[in-house]
Image (cartoon, rainbow, N blue to C red; front, top):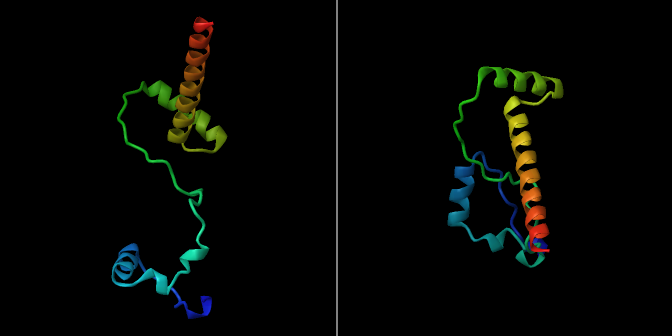
Length: 102
């Protein structure tokens, strides 16, 4: 069956690809019987939202110094620190509530 499949063209943009697939039948190009069900999206970034927060300039300067030592953007370092603290606090909340129920 693979020999009957047409080659998928190279697209110069997402818009061009989108237009192509809206006007062509994918079964002429892809053997869906061989498709993996529920493939992992390993390169899919989690959705994010921009927030505005006021921080003391001294804190931003300290974050930039730490981030520079780790060779990462300071915003990434801030996200790491926030994430770690939220996990820590969430874990502490779970443990304290389970101890209260015992």
